[in-house]
Image (cartoon, one colour):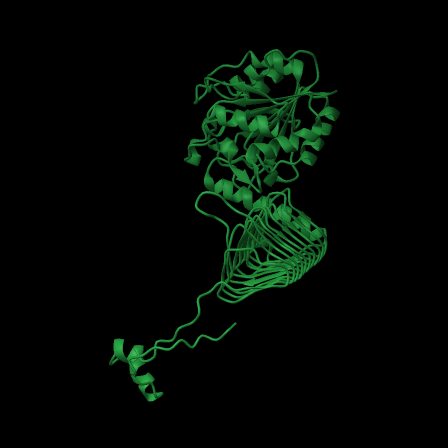
Length: 483
């Protein structure tokens, strides 16, 4: 008995999200809601994957082309209920097998649960199986009604349920397995005789039972997996449950999370054992954290590789590489294309963009490094700025090995500083500095004696200067020392 087709229902308006985009395109843990659903279905290897789209059709179809290029999008022009959506999804499907139908807004469903559901359905030999759940608050869900033998008799939607039926706690999760022949025969017999005036897929259960088929409700082991998303509050609830699932996985694999409730990790992040993550940290995209690294507190890493025993503290890093034993932070901003070598340092209040900092090199504090290559063993002094942009074009700066860039140096690109060279503090360097040379680019200091007494007479500064022996000589002197 094969899984002939999987049908994902994603045509709804999602009006309660109060958004201009489709509900299924909202993200949880680095993937869209519908991407999570498709990821759960894929390991079941359906012969066909069909997604019924409606509202926000273009955006959803473009997203599907990116995440599931083999999926077939079926457009439901008129949203006339889940039964109608399945009717059009079955078009041109022939043969036998099993049909899986599920909603596109249930991101917590796992492949393991779906596989167990499929095994149970095959063992039952029923025409249809419905995955059910016991919810603490079943409001809004269709209720599962069983007959005296425990078989599934029918499903009653919340809007059509009386007070007695609303007391039933077992609900329909919207996940179904149908024998294709039974579904194809029953789906054409649906009517709109309900409060919504729509074709309900749930009514297929009654049709199958009435025509000699059999139906069963298979209870889920974890109701949380079956939770759907209709508004922003439910989005946040599902995100928190996903966070707990992901964090639990990493902690069981040997990762220390000091405070799991404030640590957010995307599903595609890889973390090796013996990593320590401090509170308030977020790891997104395809970040990779190597063994022994220390992350946080209050650190955001997006598509960042972090090497063995590296440390990233109170920093924001994106699309960057941090080498073994390197230290980053606090308050460091690594922008796209940054590569921090092994045993290197990007210190406090440092911004680095599209640059390589060689092994054992340091950019300790208060500096901007952009579009540069820095060799090994080099030190960039405090408040150094790599002036890489002329207003039109970004230019490169190349710094050699074992260079010492003095504090408050402005390096105006394009230029290079050779191996072992120095620059004087406070310099504006506009020309190449040869290996072993000292680059000096500043005016000679000139002291104007008595200026404060003449120009700021009566101020506290003038009074203090007078106490220190300053006199208004009316002259100036150039006392700049040689470098």
